[in-house]
Length: 75
Image (tube, rainbow, N blue to C red; front, side):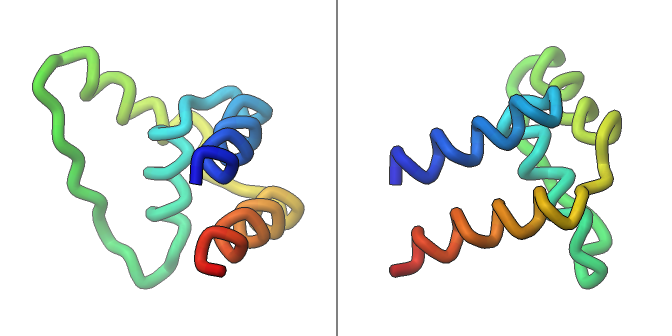
C-alpha cells in the first residue's frame, strides 16, 4: 500500500498538487459525485483542500495511470 501511495503522490506532484488535493479533484471528477466532504481541524487544512480546485481536470494519461495504480491496490 505504501508503494501505491508513493506512486499516487508522484502523479499529484506532477500535477503540482498535494496528494489530498488530487484525491479531492479525482473524486469530484466522477460525474456521479456531487460533493466531497472534507474534515479539517485547522484553517490551513481548508486552504489546502480548496487547492484541489486549482487543477480539477485530468488528462486521459493521468486517469489511466491512477486507474492502474488503484487496480494494483485491489489485487
